[in-house]
Length: 410
View (cartoon, rainbow, N blue to C red):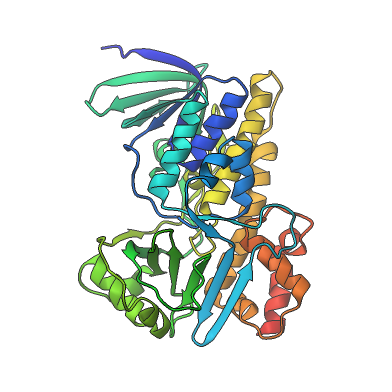
């Protein structure tokens, strides 16, 4: 039986932040955009602590006002804890120009809000429509889509953007996946009513705590508005496998191993079952191909330690929309040089700092007692998401500069 075939300019797979922002930017260009989302929104997702750099892309997509007015928890920086040591970065005090504040968001609400804005701007979003096959052999790429009721249809498009996040639809269907160079790590996480009463606790910052005995094990604590927070732990899977019981029991046991976290959350109400994810770091052979490009986590996901995921996703949406504007106006485009290489520059900056975090070198840097204010402002800019700002020496020559700094601080 021949399936019904629809046509549009651009199909976006996934209605998360990358997909919604890409759809809005393409609508600004007058493109006919169809977004196919496997889930029904709102739906749970982690990655709740945004970086200030992402605000510029929300502004570009015409979504800033609704985010500002949504009542999310204001965020102005990041606090790091290791034993008795505490250091905090204020993202307003940074080398790069641009936003210095942002929000900590329950992603179910945040992602739904962005999707609704994309719809208001004229993008069509179909929830519970899952992409099951892709054919790139014709003049135009063609997708097969299954609806919630099991019925299928096909869509032929001028271009496909895969913003499917951890679903990684095109990488799986086109055999693009390649192993990440990061060790296999897992995360256990939940949302709780935190009950934090400590007067010196700063709700305007994400709190990243190093495990008291293992420098490559760390906890996140992301305060939300209304007295709730996201809490999670990240470690190699072999380490996490030592802990028995439900995910909630494992997470509570791990949190209790850190005295400061145990004290901070003494009055917490663990009212939501914890979840876990394993082997989240991912990579692909290429970020683009004939008739398609991969956005955000669908292409590469590094690690949650510096909350870079949403920023990279929005940067990729912005870059891809720029290239597509040229593509649809009949100009020959070079996806490698105009999209993949520029995107990877910032991703590789984050990668340098993530790798150094896990070996302990970057921890020595941020907890060092005698920090030079100008270098601190350069580090703050990267932590705020400005990983593409080549005026920053720690972006321009991240490996060499950070290695030199590690040696001084060791």
